Length: 238
Ligand SMILES: Nc1ncnc2c1ncn2[C@@H]1O[C@H](COP(=O)(O)OP(=O)(O)OP(=O)(O)O)[C@@H](O)[C@H]1O
Image 1: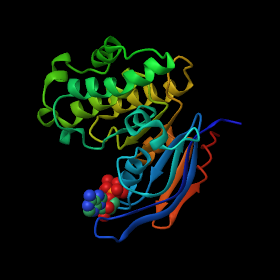
Image 2: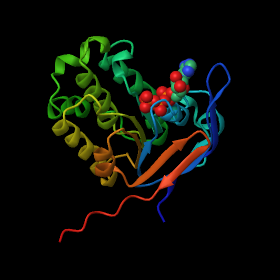
Image 3: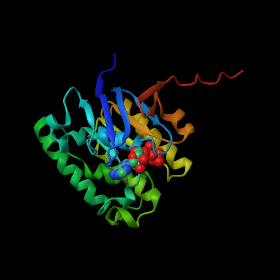
């Protein structure tokens, strides 16, 4: 049996005015899962990922390896369960500043658990492999193109190699198909790699093709919870 990493129990979230976005969301994230999360626009997919990362207020319980974000301390929890935003261009500062901040959250955990420190070289090496000009690390997020910002936002958790669960919010929506497929492969392969921390992904996409390429499980978010769909059987060649 694969290990259960994240348990999500009866999670509900409302708009600031008080009306419900969704309620009673319950599911587990297990080792090896790439859970594709789908629903119509505005249904609350981003909000749910932010609840899982403890970036949004919610009711219910979320636990990583049986412990709540408060037990870990929220910054440490977010080094285990890391959200990659839908629109990184809206982030303050530069990609390098975000990397340094996240690495500082992780440093305490690494020291306590005798884990590897963040290898800045590994992160920057991806810059080249994913076709990013190294100078972009020091440009403000809001001056980067949508595709540049997405690649940098993804290179940070991939290169830092500390999160066991990544919450990817339409991560390749601004990328061409070739780059998108290369990045998909990097993440899907990473889950199977024993030297890499990543063990599971929750992945929002509006692309059915991408869902089929990356997904191992398929959840649809509704106002009353999530429904797990059975993936269609692969086409049989005659
Ligand atoms: N801070 C906020 N204040 C008010 N309403 C909000 C806030 N954040 C989210 N909402 C509302 O909650 C609902 C869910 O938004 P969310 O971004 O989670 O949807 P989504 O399913 O990810 O949509 P999309 O597919 O378009 O990205 C929307 O109606 C949105 O307007």
